[in-house]
Length: 242
Image (cartoon, rainbow, N blue to C red; front, side, top):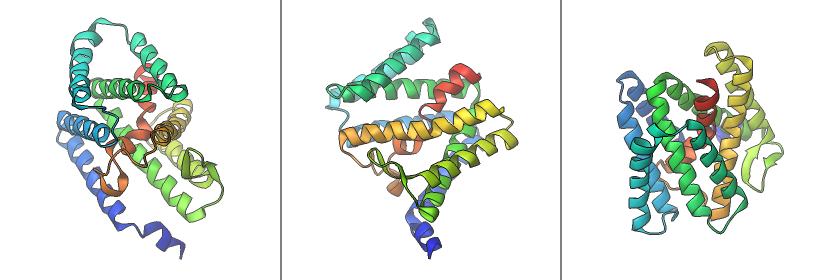
């Protein structure tokens, strides 16, 4: 009975397979820039569908801001400044609602810029994070559906349970520590950040009164709904691990 409840969403499974296949082929054939271009396009689509882009000028401004920041400003500044800017707007997006969309756009922009640059520093670790985030999300979904139990933060993420969260944390931490040679501290922190990244994006969606950023990936939502687990992890890897 429980197995039917867990595996009754065939569309989610099929699209999950497609997504993983694209990422895997990108890794095997060194299609990193193709993958980044695809993700960037889907991010723009997410922001457009969810009406975070207030008008067409915001789309153009976002693209130009990416080009200017990544290719002109970033090479000239200390990365700690970028980190400070990110967390400033990250905190503002949590405590201020008036300019939430602007704050969130800046957060997403900096996230993608560091995501792209992390590919150039160590492409393997980016793919490790992506695959681990899928394992983390899938195990949380599976064990949460199977064991159910009390919700962890129902006001922000109504479907997230303690059983799913603890199970996914342990599975991801074990995978990172025993199979991918991360030390115990890094494994634990990265596994925790998968959860907090998910919660952050969920809190933004609650404030914007949307369920998913888009339906570009069908039952998986939009690309931001898929990348939520690594949203904070990228910064930890970029500034602490590497």
